[in-house]
Length: 74
Image (cartoon, rainbow, N blue to C red; front, side, top):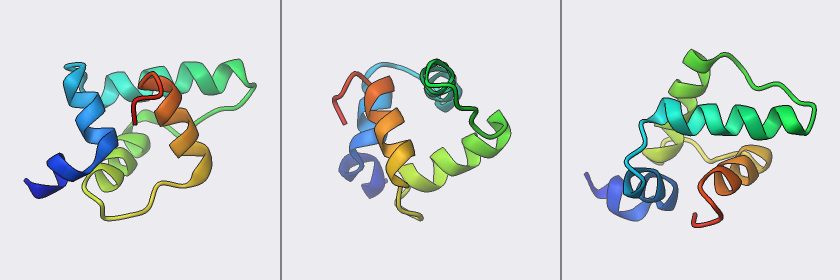
């Protein structure tokens, strides 16, 4: 449970009451506006879990998308 308190992406997502899939959907919309496609939702859900639980670092472009999707709060 410590990861929930220390991870700004998870905290920001939970403060909005979003499920991971809602965050991923918003990330996909933002990426689409830039002419990019993200991996399938099931793979993104796995990655978001790993990132939020501090098991893997968030790559730069995904960090940018997550911050934008969360309104720049993270």
